[in-house]
Length: 351
Ligand code: TRP
Image 1 (cartoon, rainbow, N blue to C red):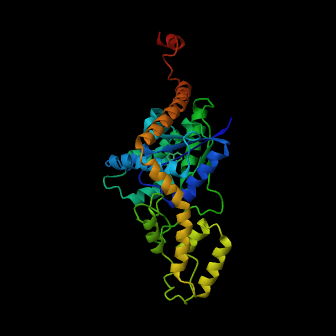
Image 2: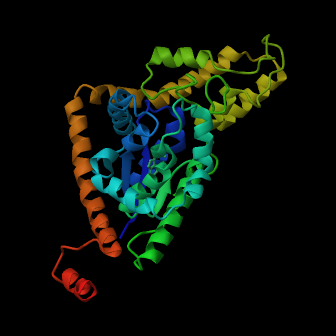
Image 3: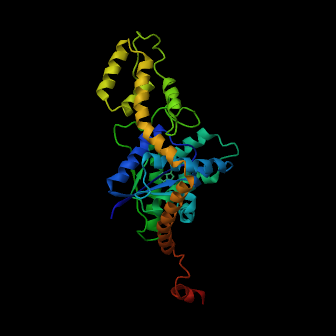
C-alpha cells in the first residue's frame, strides 16, 4: 500500500509565491511521483477558529485556493482535494481527542502562542482557536496519513498529533490510529520566502506578497518596488547582496545560478543598478507564473466545475474518514447498538 500524505491550507487568502516554493511545488511533485496517496484539504473549519465573525471571507477564499491548487498542477484524479467542514467525522474525532489532551498541554503549543500574540483577539481568545491543533490531529489521523508535508511552524502540530495517537491507542488498546511524521520542504529551498518589503514573512496582512493570480503588470510593479540595499544609492556604489530581497528571490527562483553569481559579483563591486537586476528577476518570475496565471484564468471561467471537483473530493474523503471514525467509536466502546452483545455484556451489572 502507498503511504498516505495529507496537508492543507486555511482559506483566508489567495496563495502566494511563498506557498508555491514552500509547499505547492513539492505537493505536485509528490503527486506526480505516483508513490503516494495524497490528500489536500482546504481547512475552512480551522480558518473559522479566528474568523468566526467573517465567514464570508472564508467562502470567498475557498474557491480562490481551489483555483490556485488546480492552476499549479494539483490534479483531482491523483490528489483528493476536499473541504474540511464537509467531513463531519473530523469534528467528532476532535471531541474524542480533546479528552486526551490537558489544558496546560494545549496552552504550551509554541505556534499557537505566537499566533495569539500576533492576532490581538479583542474579545478574548476563542476556545476553538486554542484547540485547533487537536482538530488538526483529527484531520491527519482520519486519513491515517503517515506523512504531513508542512513548514517548520507546523512541527508542534505534528508532535501533538503523535501524542494523541499514542495516548488514544494506549488508552483504548487499539492500533487503529497511525502516528504521522512531518515532511519538511526539501533542503536548499528557503523555508520562508521574505515579503517584497524585506520583511521575514510574506503575508496578506503585511500586504507584501506576490500572488499566483497577480497579472503581469502587477507582478512588474511589485518586483520594481522590492526592497534591496538601502545604501546602494548610485549605480556605481558597491551594493550588498545579503539581506537584499531581490537576490534572495534569485537564489530561490533563478535556474541559471552561474548568471546570478555573476550578477552578485558585479553588484558587490559597484556598477550594476537595482533596476537591471529587478528586470532580470521579473523575467524569471514571469516565466514561472505565466502558465499558472493563464490556467487559473481559464479555470475561473467555469466555477461550477471547480465546486463539483471539491464536492467529488469531499465525498471521497468522507468515506475514508467515516471508516476511521467507526474504528475509533468501536475502540472506545460506543458501538452500543451494533448487536445484542452490548446488552448482554452489561446485563449482570445492571441486575
Ligand atoms: N495549520 C495548517 C496551516 O496553517 C493548515 C492545516 C489544517 C493542516 N489541517 C492540517 C496542515 C492538516 C497539515 C495537515 O497551514
